[in-house]
Image (cartoon, rainbow, N blue to C red; front, side, top):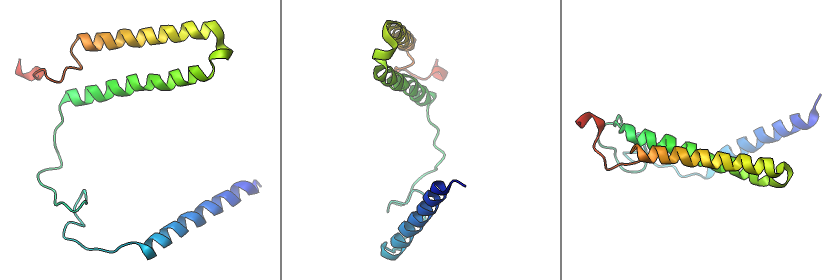
Length: 122
């Protein structure tokens, strides 16, 4: 049997139980009128929670994730730059060029322009 894993598992369970117990014993107890409301923060919420966001919001979020993910790939490349040599260098140049071309395309079609009227109004 793998006893270090069992010891670690027991340690984690005991630690979580201890943190919950200390939090329960030392934590504040209050019952404000807005305590049970969704998004508890002391402010009573107004309006519906079902707010419709523009499609442009989701577009920009997806573009951000795609173009932000390139940083993770470039970071990994930078860590192994000496080992992968010139082939890796030209590979990352091609990668950055492709991302730049994609960004230029997205910018050119106006997908990043928030000031534009929605497509339904045309």
